[in-house]
Length: 196
Image 1 (cartoon, rainbow, N blue to C red):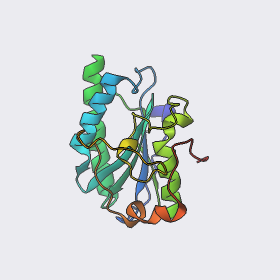
Image 2: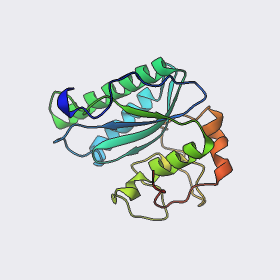
Image 3: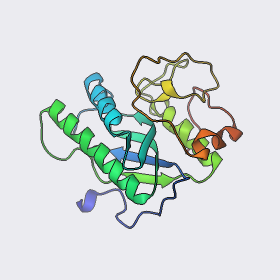
Image 4: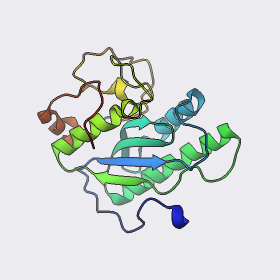
């Protein structure tokens, strides 16, 4: 990727199935923003198509102007790579078609961080689901960011109504850390997440 590459190309840490993963993908400079209705609609379609393939599961996401945060699970490192490659290809093709262009959409390989403890998982859930507030792109305090999977999240402190009529772009978590473990440290408020 040349001198501007921002993700290490050294081997990734070996992933165990019991650990969720925080993944970040960043689009190349000069492209339109992702927090635009048509772009987001296409990303949702890509998420639905790629959310559960090759032993890879997309559990949560937050779409920002030039990057997307995801919390995912995978059977192993190979499943993570295959699942993310498939998802990024879907996203790139859809966005290039929308933007009437050809060429690279993503700035580099995806960045990933394995989450090994309940506290790490809780911190990342808060960080990802409230990421729009951190960036100042979403200020409404009583609802989740509409460019995130927050409306399907059942771990908010606030009691929220859920719209079950919208087809899910995510799949249910299976790891103990995401289903149960993180809750030992308390539910998450609809507010800016702590520093990460």
